[in-house]
Amino acid sequence: MVVLTGSTLTLEQIKQVCYQGEVVTISPDSMRKVEESRAAVDKIVAEKRTIYGINTGFGKFSDVIIEEHDVNALQLNLIRSHACGVGEPFPEVVSRAMILLRLNALIKGFSGIRPVIVQRLTELLNLKIHPVVPQQGSLGASGDLAPLSHLALVLLGEGKVFYNGKVLKTEEIYKREGLEPIVLQAKEGLALINGTQAMTAMGVVNWIEANDIAYQSEWIAALTMEGLEGVIDAFHPAIHEARGYKQQMDVAGRMRGLLSGSKLMTRQGEKRVQDAYSLRCIPQVHGASWQALDYVKEKLEIEMNAATDNPLIFDGGETVISGGNFHGQPIAIAMDFMKIAMAEFASISERRIERLVNPQLNDLPPFLSPQPGLQSGAMIMQYSAASLVSENKTLAHPASVDSIPSSANQEDHVSMGTIAARHAHNIIQNVRRVLAIECICALQAVQYRGVDKMSPQTRGFYEEARKIVPSITEDRIFSEDIERLAEWLKKNNRQWTAITKDEGTLVLES
Image (cartoon, rainbow, N blue to C red; front, side):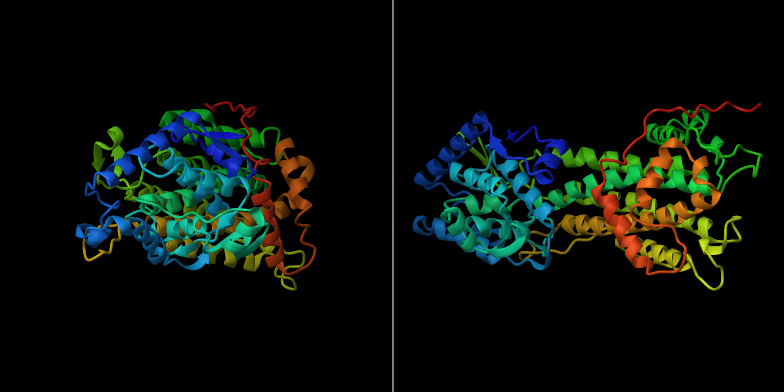
């Protein structure tokens, strides 16, 4: 069970809830804060104080005063009118993360919602009822209004949900589970939709997948190094300590650990003095991407525990401040940074693929073909990798530098953070497929070299991967191999992480 407090949620807990189905509960102290915050809203309504979002319109309508008897209708109208999302829905795991993150933000006690809202969001998580949320339609300020409105619809008994692998109407599931629709009261609709939880949920899922892929890229690069009889000296610790980047040193150390005991690796001068950059610079390039992933992780961990709606309530309602915590710029920039970092894993991988298949760059059979000429082998797999890498270049264009004014120029600068997060997700899927192609080619190359000469670590990876993709003995529909291996990498993400034991001690040559 994961206990939510509003300020202590971790990425590991998100994995437990979103990927392992762990149930959640709310800490008593957090529920107390929710009750106190709601009491403050009730007091404001009773005193007829004019506060944005409680008894005023929204955006450009913030100067329109709402009569007390229309306060509840204001919140209902807000949710229905703002549910303008379009396109394919977010993956279900992202929808689940969205509920979790919105719940964690609301229980901080600055939002003024009733405990019944907290209880319903908790029920949705624990019953695995996940809103169907269209991906497109958010500007990333005032937060993720459209996506979160689709989430809020479910509390009202409206919209659609994922449930037991199906997409069904919310009202049908409510009847099945004995749940009653909630009637929103003052400020609750605004509190539910004014925040960055769509982009952050997508960002968290992105980071979890990207972190796994980054480790897997090292295993696959190690296979390629063996298949091309690479020069191990490039990973000598002295080189990387001389530069000083921790992530670069870590990658080099893991590469030495993965390749320790391999009889396929060479020393400088044995077959060549030095390798091409795509082999020699693995620690530098992968390490730089790891630096970006560390930055992204730091920003996500802050945003996961942040109050991002507006206005926020302090001092028992004596201080109610309209601000801009809903603005997604921190996550927008982080997601754009992630896009660049992940695209580079695929970019350098594709160059290694070229070195594996191009007969002008190695002494392996041309295109790793079993019968060069009659059979094309891996020739067109490199084309597919190149296409994915090129697509990533367009997706990596920063979304955060764009802005379009909205709400009659009241909301005149927006983040586009959700677009950045969505494109980062697309890039990550492309990267995994490029790495799957490199893996297929590297498996074939080490088979030609001699599997018995591999390191014990890479040999284990080879044997497991060969259960998914058999040796290329004749041309076949390689699309199926690529997709099957990519899915295997995604599902076996915990298995192929880091080799931290550095047994590959190298001696500096004089």
